[in-house]
Image (cartoon, rainbow, N blue to C red; front, side, top):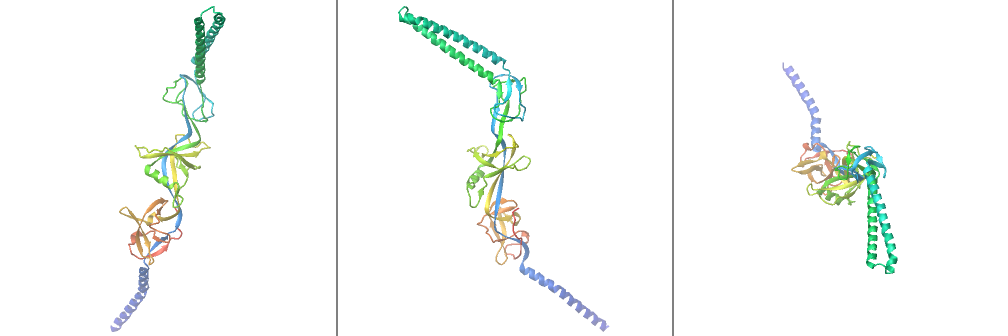
Length: 381
């Protein structure tokens, strides 16, 4: 009986010793890891080229938009073009019935011939009286009357000729031609409609779109910032080339440039309107189209921190930076902008060489030791 008890004690001793041998390395490893700190990924900051973009909604207009309106009233007799057609300057577009204006011109020309005859009669009378007054056969008063009649005839002829010229112009206005080269817009009138100068709608709008303007508005504060960074070439600068995002989400292949602003802030909206110009040789962009313009602000030497590496407490942003002993130090940061998934950090808060914890922020507190795992080279997203 005693032998069995002894055997059991020996077996228990050996089992306990073996278990101790198994647990001892694990305990040592845990103590070693505890001394190194919590293993977390860390990013060593460096200066990188970065950019921040801002989008603004707007609309497109041709560099020249001309409302084509009739200069005379009448029945629309011919439409020589269709909506969307490209026309050259001087090409015929519409025809107003010319018959009333042709008759007016005939009457005006007949009146010119009548006044010419009256002038000729006055001239004949003046020529007849001239030798008589020289020989004192008639009184000088009669001669003055003849001279006055001659001048009246001259004036009447000039007025008749001017009226005939006006009728000629009205007749020519019945044929409406393209004032510029461009594309025909909507044509609301049809053949047989009465048209005139007082119509609320033009016959069409002719757009020259080999170049187009993109009009967009930004807030007053954005505009002031835009003016400040436009000529900054050190810490940041505004890319002079702007991009156009079309209605389908594609980026227009040709860059544009901002070339003008209205110069006044709209009091009702607090915005100011700017204009960018784009080349449009393929006529892809049309007047009335909408889109977004993209302004790009460049930072030649920026310090970037992933957004996931930051925490926000009461509207303030913080990161955990490791000191020389790999202890986490919570540091407040100032954000200048956003580049992709990264914050652009003010250099007064962080500097190159700082090591920032990029994830697992819920596992550490201020002063806790961290076992840094270097993320490697930081790529812009």
